Length: 188
Ligand SMILES: Cc1cc2nc3c(=O)[nH]c(=O)nc-3n(C[C@H](O)[C@H](O)[C@H](O)COP(=O)(O)O)c2cc1C
Image 1 (cartoon, protein in one colour):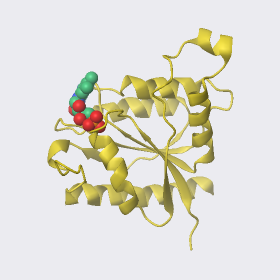
Image 2: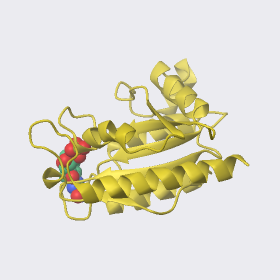
Image 3: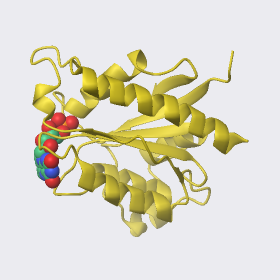
């Protein structure tokens, strides 16, 4: 059996009925055997990044926990909505906190992204901003195939929020298979 990779999943939406969270729940059924998905520790308790807090009391526990989970993972998969053409503030804040650590956890880490939005473009504009931040943080950024889930309300069951759209399932499956190959290559 080939190596198995731990892939940490960071969901950018905090709301209960989130389509992005619903997509994360569909991932285990679509991942190849080489990928084991691990849910990231919560980041919503983090204060807004402030260097004064960092200097006075160090990094908050939630930032340390998230950084440790990123370091321990073979790869990181972000699944996030687009807010005002960019990343949600809470997600950006979490990235900002861990980015100030000495052993910056995204450096040389294979990272990939999926996005769900209720608009037709599926969060594509947010993905550009995410790519910019990940470039600055020296992550190994996965390219294609990309996953944009537009008009999300029509792709999930209205009651259970189970992913029902076959095209989306196929796209996610193809991306996860390619991401496993990408991680293998990066580890060589
Ligand atoms: C503050 C805010 C900004 C938004 N901006 C965008 C946007 O720029 N593009 C877009 O396609 N949808 C935008 N939306 C709509 C989201 O696509 C929609 O709320 C989506 O369901 C959020 O993802 P979630 O279901 O995982 O929470 C925005 C929603 C909020 C709350």
